[in-house]
Image (cartoon, rainbow, N blue to C red; front, side, top):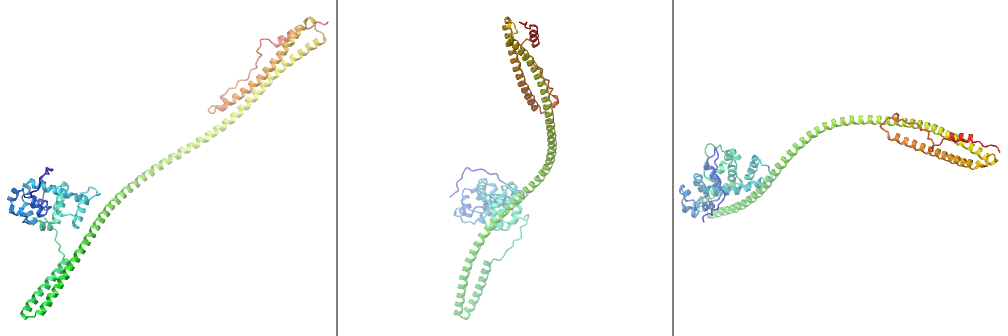
Length: 441
């Protein structure tokens, strides 16, 4: 059955300097097994015609994969349809490479190391590896050394011989335990054949049968050993896969540790720089703190001086107000005393009948006026004392609110003596009383 064609992405043909296209295309062809290659070639009659293959061989799949690769690889670059199909297959295989390097940084050399570990444990083929390098421009410089490293396996799988431009690594062939057993069996078989020849000559049939029985036992033992070897190989392969995964995990953790160490070193350097800045700031803070303490001392001293000045001013004002109030009080008391004397004199004249009866009402009116005047002066004296107390309290409040101004800047005016609100003069009243002396009866 011919493969179904789809409208897929078209890939350009990639050549790599220093590596023949035939070798690169052989790796593309090697991605498929023999039957799959035959199915994909059914519609490629032009390509088949350039080879030593026949369409009948292809249809019957009567040809090995090695022969297909060897015959098709020189002409694949001339047939894009087949080439593009194989490139699509290759990109499908690249998914396995991404899974192997999952979680790793995008570092080509690191990915190559992981891929080669996977090849060692048969998780991936060398052909997928080479195709991946071919279709990544960064991998072109490594293609030749990869061919040299895996050249013997490439020649064995494809049937192609690499040119002398490639210096292949020396092939180290270690004789396995299985091969040793096979060699021993072959040696025993040769001995048996030799014995058989001797028995046929000597007609020693019984000995021949014993030897055949031994041969049978050896073959059974060989089969058992083969089974054990296969089991051991499977166990070794499984352990190697686990070991490879642990190695990848270790490498990943080592990189994370190195990265964390670099970040720590950077943080330590930054911490050192910050420590220097903190030292400078601490010096500035110490200077500012020292200045603040000096300022607080000056403020404290200024407050103490202000309290002293406030006390002195308050004491001086209190003394001044006391003196002025005492003087005013003495003046009022003298005036009241004079009025009381006059009032008593008038009372005595009225009571003794010395005053004329016709002027008795006039003197009584004058006495009432004097009484009212005495009461008025008494009220004014009381009011003066109250206002003096209020003025002193007001001055004290002003002193308390003047924290920023010198106490000496407040000028205290002495309290003026308050005159009676009425327009009459006490001396005039007393003068009139003296002029209107009562006539004796």
